Image (cartoon, rainbow, N blue to C red):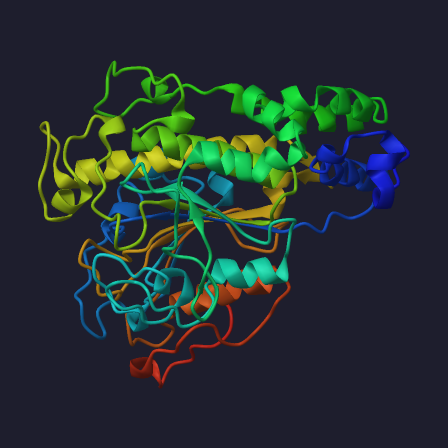
Length: 461
């Protein structure tokens, strides 16, 4: 394959609107030439309303709730291989990749304050007022975006409980009082991210066709002539991701373990008032943005932030909001714990779908999934009314073997020797990105006798 990346549009005779094809073709060229792949991608999936630590324990493992006080847990560091263990109900969708999964328990984030949401503090490790407006510093997704910039340094996609919300500022920040946007309307996010395929008056044609591949069909044919063999297969894998954007219907009726049996089929999930449809569409867009090289850092927000934590997941057949569930209320014969599990499992269904798409795209000696780390957490830390004594996370991906995965790890209790914080987790991600530093966010003054610096050595290979 012959491709001048500096002048690809001219060389291949592509239109000015075909710029998004260039990162794909450049990656294919690099692989064909045997050049190393340097892309490192980070995805954050942030759900509202807390994650109870005991709900991430492995089947057959009893993990008692820890008290909200110092020295609240054991002194021992727990490290259990997942190989012969069963994942909890809500994590079952990713069991195929169990060797890439790490469940991380026992980290604290007391400096964030707690409450219904820790807002920007959840990813920033700093105090956030209840209204969530003051931003003290950068968040980890903002920091990683600076270290691994793409065409868009950072892309934030998500849902609000209010379908009319277009853009909100809730959990991501570039720096002090510089919030990063979360786009909440999938149809508008699609136009913002991929509308660049149409330039000038042709943008109206793009809007009418509403599919980037329809608009670029001539450019795609020209590009395909320049690839052959394995490289052509790789190019097709890229394009397949965009083909999935044609599917505008809800897939909820295909998903088991919800309370929705035969709900109405939404004709266009990109414009749906149903929150689960919109979140499904945002995951589709996020996958496409990663695969075509628009960004290396993606944050997917599921009603995170103080304004949206009490969302109702009607698309799952639930007519009870997450605020009520957080206060222990059940629905349709299901306990609050059952309902939490149903909602979380839907999120992991979407995460599994994202992983499948990344796994289909060859990259280097493996796939795009091998060079991606996905972090699932809640902006509400360990519960509905959190105090951030614990902050459960699920980390998926080993970043080319740089992380020890396929494990369940539980750090010593708050104040115990060996206890670590979410800042240490974020320092671990920065270490993987090649942006090593000793501190991140605000240190916990009540842990001054413990080492709060550096990455989690226990997770690094």
